[in-house]
Length: 377
Image 1 (cartoon, rainbow, N blue to C red):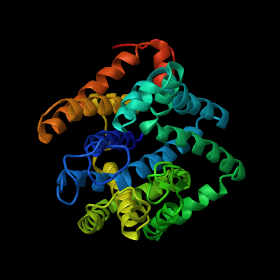
Image 2 (image 1 turned 90 degrees about the horizontal axis):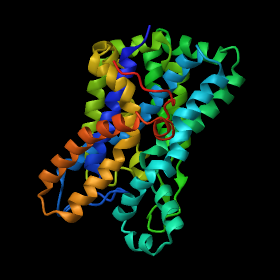
Image 3 (image 1 turned 180 degrees about the vertical axis):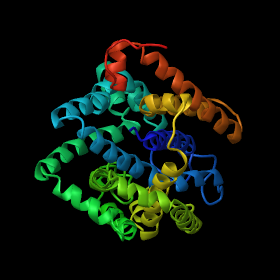
Image 4 (image 1 turned 90 degrees about the vertical axis):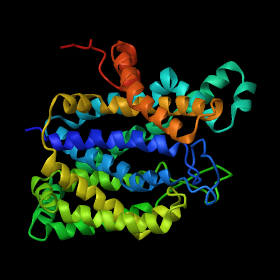
């Protein structure tokens, strides 16, 4: 039987990513990649940036955790070869070919946002195209990393051919003391945050780039596969969702209250025990909450289940293009700019998705969907 709570939590998390990027794009806290706010912190507080502090610690780890659960379910029905072929189409094709077919447009606006417009103008045509394509990765880093983690998972499965480790995790974390052991898994979040990939950006004060964190994201992905795919573990988290959510809210309140104004993507911020505690508790709380209250579907939920991946793939073009235009070419007040951008992202992205999914080649290389014709009805 299909677990609707899993589908619902995935698409709700994707919508939170869209909301995050609306706020992040204009942040004034020094987070890499945005266009900047309307004044320097701390003179200009810009309290709406609190949305970043609430969402950033948990929403990407949660997506990797859910991907791990889904991988277990898929591999119970498919061979590893079949599954990897499907994952390659869904993840690697949009993350590579899609850059040169479509995401170069996003890269063009990313280049302008980064203040490299002069360099873009001075670059010859073919070089300009390549520069834009490589700058268009944006949120596609998620699917690039996820594809690599799928390769790692197949290797791990080869080492656990008889599912002994998987079954052992079920007995340990699904047993009487299972919830305690599950809470202690948060220590792995802290361990994972200590591993960051070097960033060659000379302007980076810490010399670290916190976007590609393959070892860290491998942890929730494998936890999803080996631990949270067990019904017994899910049931324990479901029963405890209220205290877990209360604990997450308390940890988050302390974290945000003591760190607001800092770059919430910096190594120092991410590696703090309090950040890791909040992140882990929120992941657990949302898994339990959605099982308890949202394990059902309907027309809208069904549509979002089918389309949320495409919305994730496409949304940042709208953020970058509309956000850049509003910030650089209008005199609108900040409140109006936020409102217009939010409406644009949540309205134009689905429209763009519905157009592209109807064009066979584009549907394949941009969205990772099969080339077969779309059936309406």
